[in-house]
Image (cartoon, rainbow, N blue to C red; front, top):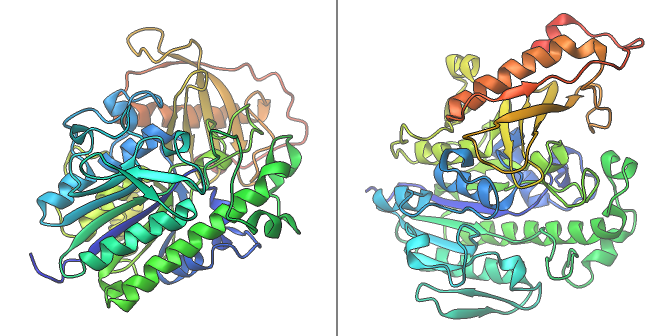
Length: 453
């Protein structure tokens, strides 16, 4: 392997809304490093998760496939043994691979060796939100030994990443850093920011309109959440500074993204399992070889597209079994690729009682909900229409149009798109119960061509 082979770092946060970032309109100035990376690199403006739940989203990022492909429908079903991961693909290509932080694809701590194959260096833990705290964190090394992580949790992960980069500066490396922040702390149902940060962002705290309109926990939790996001952005800056000081920045691909967003108990009585952009839209940007000066992509891009993109960027063969697709042809302005790129993203959300499927285009969000409990696809694979949003007229998704008479044709087009995408993932064809359009349209009209936007 040539020494010119680019290094790769995944900076993977947990439960971070896209609108925490300046490039998505947040005026708080808390993501200067991410914003700079997005502006000078490639910014996937319409980045979405494929699963607004921790485990299935992480499975998709490791494999490039939808979680349903593995029957992983909830947080209780992790990575099937023997499943190739990104670590495997880079390892096979001669990279030194490392993993730092939250794994959450197993059922125990320390994570058994057979559950984390593909990574030469390991400093991780399973569901770290349940056994660590913001200032009392620990992980486990390759041998299963506990390693205490002094300092604020995010800082300690950054310290470990910097040590890994420095130690492996002379050979190609693939490093996945998986942060808990800005996920809530399960042991206290709180968002513990670094000392002083919550107070700082409590003053003139910008609140997105969806969180202003629907009662939830945002008034109590948003300042701490912003404080956690700010510290993460500072950690991103530290890692980029390290690469710069070691003369590695220009030969290192960095991707920054998250597993899902956070709706602060506005859509249901928890934080993330819903079809709404607050749960599903994520920050997503790339920098480094092949991505610098890529500009802003407006195509609908999914978390499941990240693995094939990274392999493609490093000239590693993308397995035909991967259901995601590389965005490099879009960056290279390949007109055929642009014309053939899907007009929608498919989002699977699973975990009783929030079981459904979603298609999201630029204009519309259409969601259906499982009519019976459980994830057994062998029987009663039946869904009911639940939500339809016009994202152009209603960007904060506050007006559900699912039973509005004016949108019968829109629902038909979106339903067909959903069935097509579900079939492509290998799921059985579901029965979708159509909600009666009982709400009169009033003066609401739209152009026929808008159905296909």
